[in-house]
Image 1: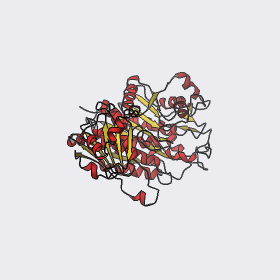
Image 2: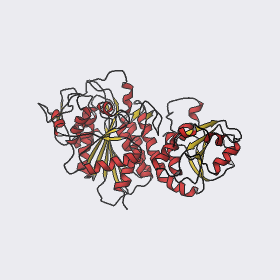
Image 3: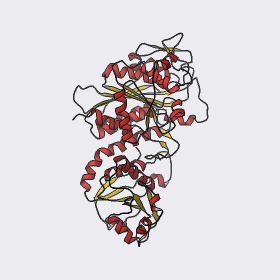
Image 4: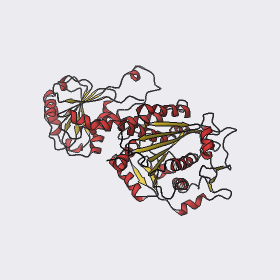
Length: 492
C-alpha cells in the first residue's frame, strides 16, 4: 500500500522551529492574532509574520488558506507556512486546512505548531490524507524514498494522539481504495484483487473468496455473463466484520469490481478506454471501508461483498440480444454489453439479502456516464427507496466533505426497461440513463430492505486535485460510509 505519512504528536518545543528542516507551519487567526509559536516565528524571521498580518492583503486570504514564506530568515526550514484558521472551526474545516498543508508538504517533513488548537487531530488527518502519491510503477531515487512524517507540536499531545487513533483508520482505508483504483488492469486482475482482500484476515475480517463453480451453483448467471469473454476468472469476495451485538443484522456494502471494462461486444471507443482501470471503484470503496472499520474495531456488524470480473470481447463473450437468468430468477435481455455493472450488482444484491438479511444495504458502482453529465465530478448520485436511510447517509457524507446528491426514482423510468422477450432489458435508453440503471437494481431489492445505490462514476477518479487527494483515485466514500456506520450502526 502507498505509504502514509507517519504522524507524531509531541509536546510543544519552540526550539524545533529554528532547526526543523522541510516545512514548518504556524496557525494565525483571521484577525491577525498568533500564539506563542507565531511570536517565536516572528522573532526568527525578523518581523516577517507581523508585517504579513498587518498588510492590506492579509484580510483577503480567508480562513483555511495558507501563505508561504520561502527560505525564511533565521530558520533552517525551506518554508514557513502560515495557516489562517480560527480556534472555533468544524472538524471538516480543520481537516481541509490540514489537507492544504499536506499538499504543500509533498515528500518533505512537516512540523505543525498547533499550540492549543482543539482540532489538531483533524488537521493531522487532513495532512495525512492529502500527502498521497501512487508511485508503485515509477522508477528513480525520488520514488524509492520513504514518505517523510508530520510532527504536530501542541500542549496536550496525548489527548490529540488518542483522538487521532480512529481517525487514522480512515486514511488507511482511503489509501487502500486509492491504490486499488489506481492500479493498472494487468496488475490488478480479478485474482490479484481477491488475494489483496483475502490478506485482510490479518486485521480481523472474515474473508471468503467464491470461485466460478460456486457462483454457478448459487445461480449468479448475470454476474458470470459479464466475465465470459475474459481469461480472468470471475470471483465474489465476502468480507465480514462482526464488531456489534452477536446475531444482530449487519449493514451490507456491495461493490462493482470490473477490473477492466472494454464494453465487451458493445466495444467502447478507443479514446479514454485506458480510464476503465477504475471501473472497479465501487469494490475499492467497499474494501477500503471494511479495512477502516476493522482497524478502528468498529462496534457494528458490517458485511462487504464485491463482484470481481473483467468485461472483454471474445468468441465466448455475451452478445447483445442474449437472455440471461439472474440469481433471483428474473430474466434479462442484454441490449448493450457495456451496461455490465448492473448485471454484476443485481446478483450480488440478491445474494446479500438472501444470505445475510441485512438491516440496510448500500451498493457502490462506477455505473453510468450519465451521472457525470448530470452531476459532474463534485457529487455522487444517490438513489434510495427509504427517505430516512438516505437522509442519514447524506448527513454522513456532508459531515465528511464528500459530495452526494439525491436523484429520483419512479415507475415511469421503470417502464423504460420493458423487454419483448424477457422480464426486463439491461438498459432503458440514453434519457435518464443513471436513473434507469438504478431502477434496474431496485428490482433486486426486497420490499422491506432499506437500500441506497451510489453511482460514483464522477467521483471515484478525477482529472484534477480535490481537497483531500491529488488527481487520480480519490477514495471517495470511505469516510462517509465509516461515518454512517459510526452514527447509525455502532453498538453503544
